[in-house]
Length: 130
Image (tube, rainbow, N blue to C red; front, side, top):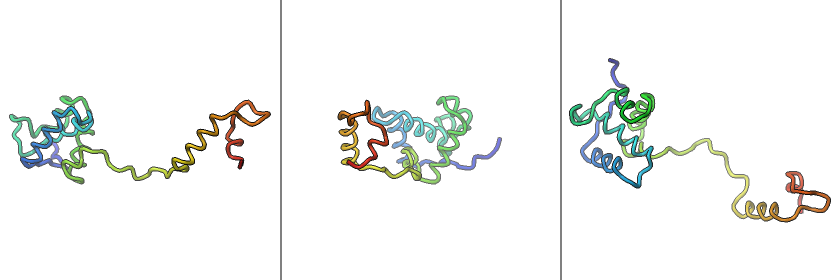
């Protein structure tokens, strides 16, 4: 059996926090799944107590893929155990073209009646200065 690259070793506080998240009704399903993956792959906890399992076994039990399990363990090693439960920041997000005020003006304009000779607003008509 190949050796795991990212071994998860939880402290007692981290384990308690993950157990709380996995049982929470306020956490999302993804956060609960990530918490359960980390609990099941804890190297300090013996297999009989629910830890230190192979990725394929964890994936079968939780209904995900072994790659997902591996990625969650990798993220826990990079960001920290509790920080890996949340989504990461989106780095390639495009900047908005319009702010809230401009967007409200655009919606108001498109909901108004179109100019004479036109049955509806087109992008060309919206682009023309008033």
